[in-house]
Length: 431
Ligand SMILES: *Cc1c(COP(=O)(O)O)cnc(C)c1O
Image (tube, rainbow, N blue to C red):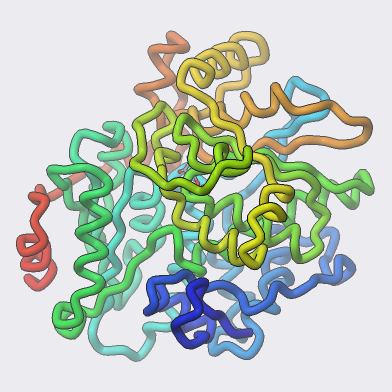
């Protein structure tokens, strides 16, 4: 399969090249030339997540240099469970995506990308530096996935004072080939510094650079797997498609679900749960697409005013915005509702979720009950990662999952960095 750019002004790339490059040279995003349609009978009903992923992703790897490595890549990347657990509401389930090493769904994409990139780098003499700007979860997932891998160095940039203390500790705890930079600015400053460095051809010649942000196909494609796995399990047990409610920021996770549905997996409705950043809900309600600056909310990993994957969504519908609006729904949930939902579910049902997952629970409360159908609410992170929001609200401390606890016990170090491209690039050049 070949991968054109959404902007159509760059040559189509192989999967390996698209994964290695991240962004297409015309500034667009790489997309599958056509979405393969999948035969449900090809999946082993008793297979685990890695087996489902291998079958699902095979057509995307057809003809690529990585095709023979796909089963091994899936075995390496999909070591975590993604259980569907019952919720108090009888027609609803929680799809828990936070059982990876850094307790957020981003572990899946980061581990898959690492398994691909490390194979692509084999035999190259110069080490590759992977830049990642993060508001919290992405940096930790990418750091954990590449920690100790030969031939790569990871540089994480995060906004000083704008991530939770636990998140900051996690970002600085890796050491070795993973470096954390505490930037005296905002997340947007971090992202701009990364982009400027990536676009600097002279710097690239001295220090080969790549990025691991959420627009990478190497992160997006594997995220289809847990939707496929959950929907297939439900299909085999109940003979019906499963409907999803997805906490959404940059639209990577929801885009993956939409691709899986378009390939013919038994996925019914898809609803997006957004926070007060209402760019998508306004568009889906019929307004023009109007990207803007992000506002800070309790669900901070979704504080996005210009979702980068929107371009892929439009491309999938050939620019027909009305058809796109019929395919999805999106709802904006404000902070007061996030708080009330968190509190109500914890008190009434013992359901303690992270603030992002709470936006999806709030959308569930507005969703209809239909005979024989079920909503899978996607739980994107473990609640213990957001202790500063949850503990004062609930009035008790939260048990930390073992992998996260182990990271919090390691020493942590981050170098400080001004918002200054020269200083950053000098730091990158210094071995
Ligand atoms: C990144 C993130 C999201 C948003 O996912 P997108 O793919 O950017 O839409 C939601 N919840 C958590 C916990 C996240 O880390």
